[in-house]
Length: 121
Image (cartoon, rainbow, N blue to C red):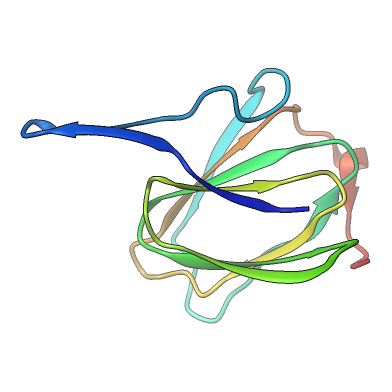
């Protein structure tokens, strides 16, 4: 089941610092970011058998639609202190990317093509 959380953020007149720690099980083994998505395009359209992902919109905004055993949920990510946790078994689509969107994804597993599930539950 997906979970939207607010990351701890600390600020003073010199700026802000947002912390990501103790959120995914195990270690972070993979990090990547998605950007430059043309208007109307969709990303992801898959789930994972064992991988947990944390999605953080470091710039701009996007929409994430997640289908899990509990139904379908829609999330709008538009602030760098937001973090959407996608668990194993959560099938998801990413779309409605703003032109300046940069979506950071942190994973607790290395890339493994056998871990991907392309059939929507």
